Structures are given as structure tokens and as C-alpha cells.
Length: 119
Image (cartoon, rainbow, N blue to C red; front, top):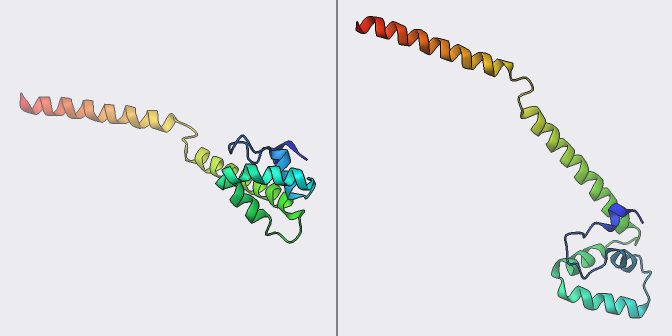
């Protein structure tokens, strides 16, 4: 099982072991281990809902493939957002400096013209 897949619930309830979760979904646990694992799930609403949803899959290999697909899609979305954010940044700030200098020059010219007319 890949490390990425085992870190699916890394921010969730620390009592629920990710490897045990994947074993539970793949029906690799004994009846006693399943019962103990289900006792842990009673305390975690999020994990219980996740298990309930994942158990709706007809093919028991689908939850693992589905989790991998979700991770890939999430990485793609995050990469797209990162690219959009980088495109919004100013790539070359030289035009900003030119604009600031131009505004300062215009203000200085306006100041000298106004001060000439007031004398």
C-alpha cells in the first residue's frame, strides 16, 4: 500500500489507524479485529461516515482506487490554482518602477508650474 494512500486520514482522529482502515475496507481483518475497529469508529463521526460511504462501492477494490483518484485530482486542482496564482503575480516589476518615476516627475512639474503661477 503506498504511503500517500496511508496518509489519507492524517489529520483525522489519531485513534483510527490508516492501515487498519484500509484493511477493514479490503475485508482483511478477522471478525474480532473488525469488531474492535468498529468500536473505534463509534467515537469518530467523520470516520464512520467515510466508512459508510466507502462501503457503498460494489467492488471492494474501488475504495482504494477511488482514494488514489481523489488524491490525483486534488493534486491537479492544487497545481492549477498555484499556476493561476503565479500568473497573477507581476513577472517583471520594471514597468511599476517606470510608472512610479513618471508619477513623481509629473507631480514635480505640476508643483513648479503651480508655484510659478502663485508668484
